[in-house]
Length: 329
Image (cartoon, rainbow, N blue to C red; front, side, top):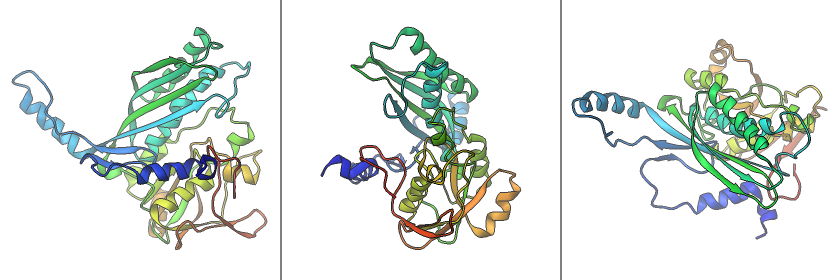
């Protein structure tokens, strides 16, 4: 099969089906979500004599209540950005590289802790530009109290690439995945959609970590995802993992964005989540800014959309997809 026919998400499903059967017992969630989820190890720490007993009690208490989160994202020149003579361009590249991973960790109900940065550098890029990339990474790392603990720097023949691997933690009771939506749940979203596409992806993204943590701690949502691959694609992913369909009746559209950009634009980090109808008032009580955009229905991957003209449209796929020649809808 040609990769262009399989597409990014088809390739992910192919890899997922070939996962090793002898999985480690500490794997909770693997391929197919915003981040992998691992159970923390019960290994004893190496501590000075006399402190072990007390420290082990504290450690076991922390381990018992938390999971480890791990995610990775890459930005490639010519795919995610184009190099232009713009002020703070390289700072923005570093910023967005880490922002994408922070959003993934947040969508799982967790918070980031440690990062690794890998940069592939072509000859056309100088030290000043690389320094600006790290400044962009550092600005977010400081804000979210993330330690940059390593990575790799390699040469590239042509294009610049920045890849971030981010670790985080989540309270077990707060963990949210893409697979918990139930028929009848309301679909909700933070923010507006299409603004990034309308501005040619020039703006720095907003990260909804505060909202994500509040949603997770409220124990109201049944599933959650970030919208980095676009509104429609993100809802499709929830439907795929939750074995259900969706009816979209409201598309919050950013100023200056077209209806199509709002549906498929991507490169935004809003939250899309599902909530039981009887918990909707509890959600409003959290004071989180959100809009109700639809409802979970029966029928796996059955997506019904009410267009801006009031017509009911059936959607099978959509949003940006690597390897495919064009976006389908």
